[in-house]
Length: 461
Image (tube, rainbow, N blue to C red; front, side):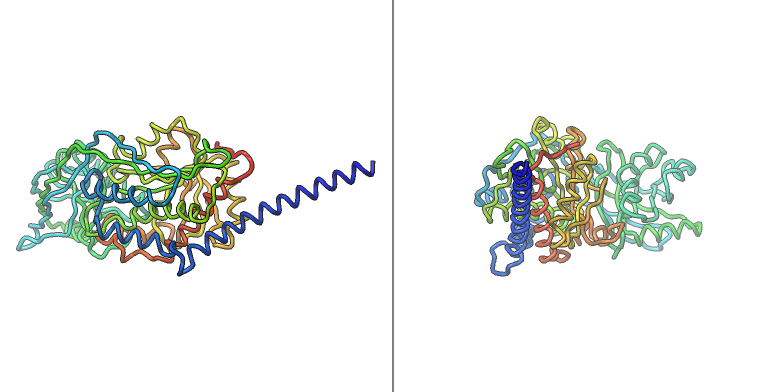
């Protein structure tokens, strides 16, 4: 009996020592990741920022299907091929329909004595056309139902209460206004804070008949005040946007897992951007893409091969919102693969403090344990359940039920910093911070490594 008790105690001690050793290894890997990224003499120090600056400066905005987008994809693939990953490839989306803007303007004729050009930007999928008419201001879709807008231009001037409070008017407003009889649509820019900059974005409908544009917050309020005084407001909208046939590619790269190579952790962002400035697409979402790429790169640099495959992706076509964009294409063509999680970085790149997770209870519990056990030292241990879904990762979850995650970064509840620059010419390298980008690389690399190298089976749903 004494021998049996001794053997049981010995096994328990050995098990404890083994677990403790594995914990120490994980802690050491996290520390190595941090030290490698934060060391000013390391080739990976500020690498995500510097690579982002190169692509933003060299190629400019990356509108879906444009030549600039295609050239930047080819250049990024060529660069990634030098990193030594197990596999690097492109996946073509086939024939796609994209959109490009042309000359456009909004001119205020009344009540001004002389015509006044207003700062504006056409919405994605807005057709070419010129309309001049009286303007009626509405503040909600319900109000639209109760006002006669036949033959008029509708101006949606809503109250900002976060992105969802405004984006509904941009995506659905033009179609609903047309159905009510309007011959043009003006949207108050979907912006938290404005410095007289218009914010673009797509409307959900490719087949609207009349021009749809965004104007600045300041001018939307001005038109609202004019109408409240009973003044007649007359505006002319000119647009020349066109749809055209083209193609585009997703970019993928991976480190194959050592023990479970068919279990895949997907991480990335969207490489396309809007077209409104000389550098648009720095924050949305070039930074998110390159932070995920650098996360994979640092694991390769350190010689780390986790048990499961980690796959990087640069999705194509998120901004235009089409059914055949890169996220939908990937979800359809890779639905039979065993995805453990899909991680997307597309909400900015200020300092990270944790992760959002949308998944079943057991997967959420696992990520919570890993983050609190190993990521407190880098300040990224907070986990937010039911807050991990985004546009591109969400496409895969819709098809396969895959858990999804994102990085939570310093901002307020309505992401006012992010949406100050969102879809404007102000989305540029000026708003980026190299140290914050490094912190995001560290956080993403660490959580992906911890999940990919977890010893036990990972619950998906």
